Length: 155
Length: 251
Image 1 (cartoon, rainbow over the protein chains, first blue to last red):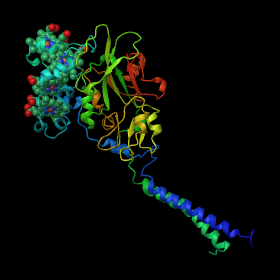
Image 2 (tube, rainbow over the protein chains, first blue to last red; image 1 turned 120 degrees about the horizontal axis):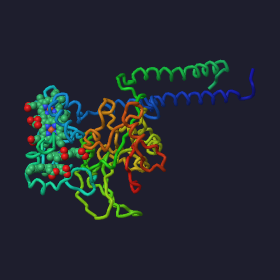
Image 3 (spheres, rainbow over the protein chains, first blue to last red; image 1 turned 90 degrees about the vertical axis):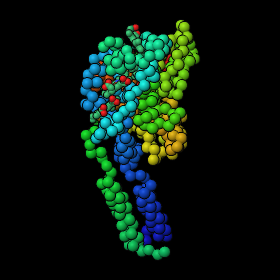
Image 4 (spheres, rainbow over the protein chains, first blue to last red; image 1 turned 135 degrees about the vertical axis):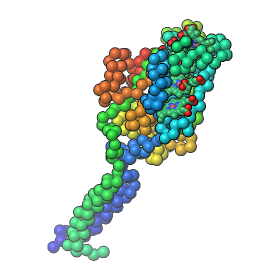
């Protein structure tokens, strides 16, 4: 029994179409990266890749775990909002190592360091303590009169 | 080619049944190996943002330096930077804005009597509906489930559409990788319970990382008690960097 003349042609077209769909599904599988669409229109596993980036700044809490004396001093003065690594630089290599003494951080150059925050500048907030570093210290090291961890003179 | 109707139906049926089956089998094979981050950090519990108090910024550039160090940002490019505004008077259409080396080494003093002057730290605004994400042709940049706009550098074509689309100028092409690069809000740090490198070193807490989904985060008090603003609100990007004491001249 035949539906109509040349119905076989339709069958061949249908077969071709199905083949095309099949090829598309397989090609799509190999073209779309793994995990694409896991959370949205992007590669899901990339979140983990980004998280694997190493940390350079250990964070204040870690420093305080070992240097509790300095931490206490710092918290009692007006430098309390200043993080350790704001002055000492990135110290994860020191703080997170098994032997922190082997990666001893160099001590900061006080004059350049203090001036960076305290050098007079008209764009700074008016209530922020500022000095003309050269005039104020007469070239002497800031640390001979100020303790960096408790900057009030004489403290 | 001669097929009987019976053969045709047989072949077609097999194909129709097997194609989705094959697809499903392939998917199943894959999903087993996708890592679903089995750790303490739960993306669904966070919605990251930042607050910036312009009145507290002293323009020391510690944030710019720390960002460059933490993220190996190439010289001459900035994921965060500090701008200095000098406004000569009310109605000054073109305020003077400068940012030498992104403010990385601070600012030489500029004393203009009568002028209003202040510093404004800038970074990616981690918009909830980002124009940069919308224009990416391949899905290489996206808003993560916890609200951070990130780039998949292994998938980025370097086409620069997003660089043009960002209304805040927060993206650049990495000179070596030739893919787009931008602030990740230190995604590798905040997902470990640390703050961002820039906030870690900010001496006055002018910039503070905030988690809007954490009910105990001081950000809620900050937003409740202060007049806050986002940059270019008319762009409707739903920026999540909230500025306090922002002058209308800043854009």
